[in-house]
Length: 419
Image (cartoon, rainbow, N blue to C red; front, top):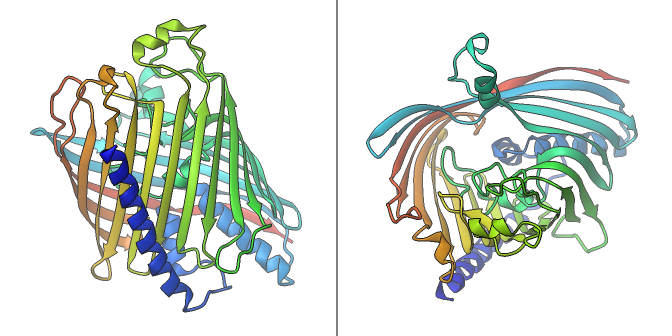
């Protein structure tokens, strides 16, 4: 009980501090000229490329409302090369840091409405040349990260395929570490990308992201409601068993200046233990559930995000055993000079006291780092240290991790036709 209270007390304090900062920012007035440089920086830091695409389409819609109608079609190719050097428990390695390349396209079929699609592939920039790889090596080193089609209107988006989840709308608040973090909020569960359960890059989803314009919004933008549905995805570590229907929902409210956001998310994936009793052997005791609350705020020189999660039959130990527990993540950054940024935060995830099948497993670490930015966070070098107080299920300590890395986003290239 003390653990739960401390998590939510911390969350409440962070939310209050963020709101106080935001109130001061609002007093300065808001801009109607599109995303500011600070907002563009934060969009560039997001793992979800749809955030940037939506902002660009919103700007085009605003231009139409201002009397500058334009219909266009085209595509863009984008990519990001990410490499890191790590030291862990006395061993050093060069690793790929989630490099990716993608293509996105949209077609404005009427005023304020677009059809769009995206394919994004992950690749290991340090792997052997493609022609020298076996089929198995190629599948390990080149894989699908995102693949979806959708429609964007003034009411919101409808998307089908593989996309960042409704749960990630809130989980993304703290998914900002490079080479560390993202372990305690339930986004990337059961040693996957969160695709099967639907909390990360969700597989085979039908998703709607709606703008609800029925609440007063002098201070906040219209209320955002996000829903998704999946069915029949495989259960990680579940043998041949599959989830039934999985439903995700999240709600987000953002200030008019975009510099303060609060949100809640819930994901529920049904599991039939009567039909698959062997699933109890991997710790499953019911449906997979993940509930997340979070807040974030930012200014010209800083960013802070905080989330707290309740997770049931969702997360696993290092041995692939499910448990129920509580998680919390914090991420913060502060610009100490023109190009230098100090970063830090923590991840904590602990099983409930009655989850004996989890053994001694726990995630508990802090991260401190430094970044040198060539272009916001799209092109940078970084160093960070993950100081670990976590344990594996067998009682062995998790080692500290020290990382030096590079993120270098490639400039978009494409073709567009406008009337």
